[in-house]
Length: 384
Image: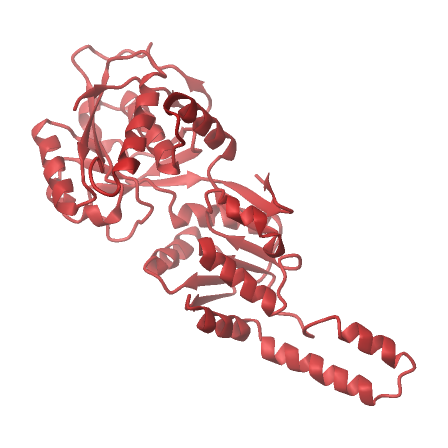
């Protein structure tokens, strides 16, 4: 299926149409699009294709051609479709979506793949991760911590498959952390680990000892002091000022709830987490607020979602917005470079402003400059 796309792209300074740019008539930019068009992830692929159709209507040019092909969320089918791109002379491809589908693509050295995954470890040399990776997120968290002069930050990471990504991102972002703890997501084990991290039993015993001491004392205001002690849960502070939790969904809520149980309140310590994609369920969890996290530009996301819904009568997901911007990014870079030298587009240092935010490109790596948000009293507030 061949689709001629019209794209609007955004420079780091402003949005402008590219129809006036001079490209010789024989030079067409051919872009492959590898998405699941069949199978259980078919709807995701359709959303991504629709988002690029939206881009088609944003600019009047016939110099860009995009060719969608099916991955079926399967590595073998992904390689088969990618091989067809090679036979067509296509040098750059958006996709595939999933990390698991990258394993055979290093055999197609003449093609650059802009995968929508946010994983960055063990990628084939011709694959560039374009998702919102852990380094991008920690860069934004680091900015927040430094601007608020927060000292002694501990890091909590679940014992899951993305643990190595987090460790790599800590090194690349150069964020300063006091200690890094790896925790088990099983609830009973998690609670025990959080108790140990927060010295909960010692602080609980400190309270019991103080109550016993006051009861045995001859203090004039003994009853008043006992009444005060009965209203608290522990005595003694924890040895950190903020917590970064690289977790999501219900598991994230369990971690914060465990911190509350051990008398570590978000009202006294900064609870910072990774990109939650504006998860609305967090707005209702007022007991665990405030929460802070980095994410893409919310206003642009809302504008994109509304426009998408108006056109297709359904809402997109964040990968739709990312794929929209990637088409513009490729076009922008091709304008600044020789189209035939596609392999060099992502090696030079460039910045590009799309709807998702600012992309920083250098040495075949893409990082995102993210915004930073607070959830408090059931509302989202932009910090920067």
